Structures are given as structure tokens and as C-alpha cells.
Amino acid sequence: MKKRTLFVSLVVFLGSIFILNACTPTNTSIKVNETSGSPLSAGTEKIETTIAPVTPVVTDTPTPTQTPTLTPTLTNTPTITPSPTPNMVMPGNYYVGKCAEAPGQYSATISFCVTGVRVTRDRHMFFDVTWNIDKIPPDVTVTKRSDYGNRKMYLIDNLGNRYDHVNGGGAAYKSLLMFENSHTPGWFEFGSPPVGALSFDFHDDDNHMVIKGIYLIPGFGYISYDKLTLDQYPLIVEYDKDKWTPTKAADGTNMLTHKKMPTCTIQAKQPQQPQGKLKSQSKVGDITYDIYGYFDEGLNLYFREYIYGSGLSGMDPNIKPFFSVTIPVENSVVCIMAASDVLARLGLPTP
Image 1: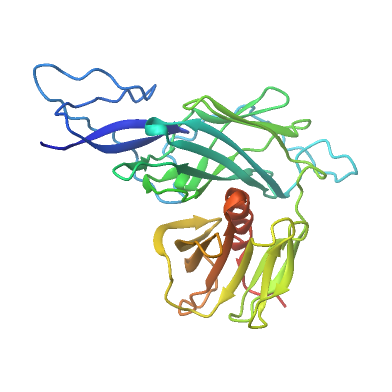
Image 2: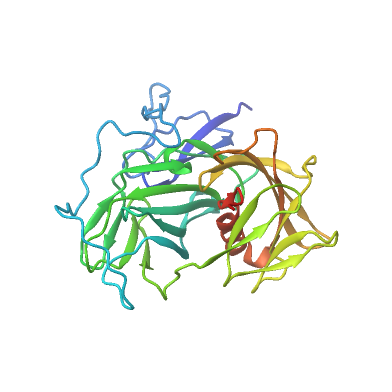
């Protein structure tokens, strides 16, 4: 019996479309409606071939040929005056850690998370996000398409203003294969909010999902970072003091242990051959890592190995930091998001 590849739209993320390729014993072709993601009926007289629409080829930090119009448009940049109760979004780092889920084909589940928000001095908002898919059948592959130019991914603030993303990077603006529990990271840039806009809802209209109540004010996730010096490399990582405790590994070197999940740890190690299989090459913040992973049945823990690739300005190209992250099964998403926040802040020590 002949097998053929069946292309089915799993779910569209921010304009990104997850395509499942599965083997079936039939000889039909299914066209995919790029707007709704629902399958159309196959032709009866001839076999039709589905061709994905052409998407722009962009880098991780592309310059759009047409800049989407941001609503609202501000004519004056408000003066930032720190106060005990600020009336506008202030520059800084904010932890979010909120997710939404959607069902997919073949009983798969797709999740989209906002892990944190970075607000720059010009008050542009950079939303760090991840995509994940689980329960993928063995004979199915999943492709996430780029969200470049997709207006179905946007913000609505508490004043009713809408914001379309003006830039993006990582998996947000890239088409790539996804794997089981890969937690693929990316980011979206949005413009400056007006006075009085302090909370935001992240809309994914392609999948009818909303992540509500993202507060960007002190007291609602504002992060105070501390620094940990790495023993193995002339580098530091910055970590959220409310979530991580500096501890010592068995060999006496510095490591981080999550305060609420003792089996969630981050440890720098000397360069070595990874034990896991390559899951992806992804940007974590502005830094690119080769990410390997495996499961230890005896310890009932997932292990992730992060090998530095590029992205740190002033870094000696011969130095390739290696990090081992232990991940509890019952809180894997939370642990991975927290660890990604730390590894995104790998840096050179300052005098």
C-alpha cells in the first residue's frame, strides 16, 4: 500500500501556521485555507499540490519594508517622572510567565507563553515569548511559520488602544521545525504606550487565544536582578533574586537553584560533549544557543544542555560556555521559562 504525506494545518500562531505531515494509506491531497487554517475538500479529478504562500525572508532582527501603523500614535513623548505610583510604563524588566493553550490535530496541544517583558529607555516594549507543542504522534512533523507582518498578533491595553508588532526575532520571525516539548523562544517589539496604559492583553486571533492581565508596573512582576560569577568562564549571569538562590554544585562551583522548585537548577560546566540529542538552535534573548535534551528515568528529570553560539558583544569567539539545566517533569514549562530568563542575561563582568 502506498503512503503519502498529508499536510494539515495544526494551529496558526500569530500568523504562524503549524503544518503537520503524517503518513496515511490514502492517495488524496488536502488544501489548507491560510486564513482559517481549516482543511478544504480535495479535488476529485486530479491530485492538487498544496504550496505554502511565499513569506518574506528575514533575519532575526529584520527591517520591515513597511512599518505597521501603531495605534495609538503619540505626538509627544511624555516625560518620565518616577513616583511611588507611576502613571505610565517605566523602563525595566518584568516577569510575566503566563500561557494560553489551544488543541490541535491528532490530539496534540499547542501552548503560547509570554515569559517576560523588557521595556527600553524609549519605552518600547519587547515581549519575550515561547511556543511549545506536545503529544505529537511519531509519524508527524510540525512546522511553525514566520509571524513577520502578521496583524493577528497584537496587544490591547487597559485604555482600549491596539499595538501591532513593529519588529521581532527568534521563532517569532522565523519558519522552523518544532519538536516535542521544545519550548521554542522568540520576541516581539511594540511601540511606547501612553500615560495611563499599564496593563496589556496579548491577542492571538489565529488561534482565538488571549493572555490577559500583563501588568508592567512595580509590584506586578518587576524584576530585581543580581549577578552570579561563573567559575568556568570569565562571565556572569544575571538572575531574579525572588526566584533563584546561589548554591554550590557537587564539585564546589557556583550554580543556581530555583526557590520553589529545588530540582530546577542551572549549572555552568566545562565544555564537553552533550549527552542529549540536538533539539534546536534558538535565540534566548539576544544570545543563540544550541540546545540539547534528554530524560533521566532514574531521577525523573528532564535535562537540557545549552551551548553558546553567538550574540554576546565583546565575547572571545573561542569561548563556548556550556550550561546544564535540570527540569522537574511536573513544572517543566515554568522551570524552562525561568532558566531561559537567566541564560538570556549571560554577560561580561563589569569593573
